[in-house]
Length: 284
Image 1 (spheres, rainbow, N blue to C red):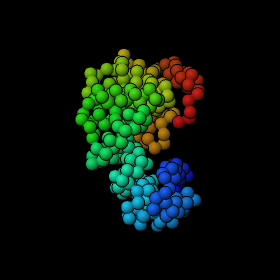
Image 2: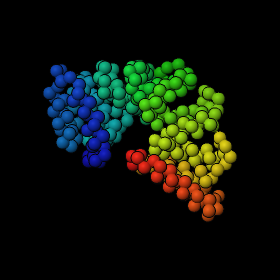
Image 3: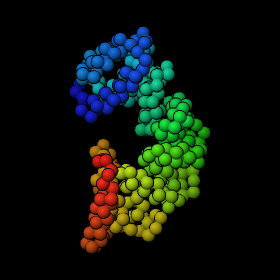
Image 4: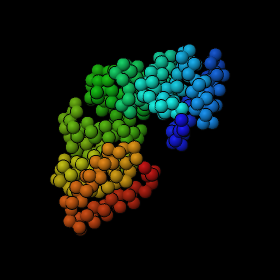
């Protein structure tokens, strides 16, 4: 099965974690042979080599096999298999697998049975000052996943993550205040946090700002601002966010229909001015 260049680059980066694991183990040589095959793009050979090692209980091999299933490299994508193999590896304390379980959770792909172990890993990362762990604990406390439900504590961890530049934490904070999830509904706070994410170039923060402006949440209805933020969001939404892109396109059309020509020009001018003032942002 062929692999896309993007997936190959992502897989290579994740496999680098295996190389950093101490090689003085009984499994070092066969796993290194697997890695060599995968790094030259020979996924069929890599899969053939890694499967028996993983089945024999090698945590490095289990981690690799989980990645192959998660990325659909040499095998049909299978999230259930990916989770199962990463879970086996993480249970043996293999750090990259534990980190991958956190990634699965943050992407909404973990299962309830994983929440306890993931919470323990997130706490270790968070208390060590790692933003990924802070992000993770924020979500876990906000939803009661693997920890007691405590939205206030979730907010506290998200704020720590924001201090380290996490746009995921900032959009989560915006959503929390917009919906009043575990805290009093506060549109001004929601706009503040969505705005911080937007200032870092986050398309979802922009999209939410546009929706709030169109609804008059936190101030009067402002279709000019709604158009500006929605147009900016649409220019930065990734290709994989098909549903969000479709919704943004509909919102943009709706806002445009409610604007006079001069207002539409103003909205486009505001978007252009915002882009000019944020020219240092990396491309989406």
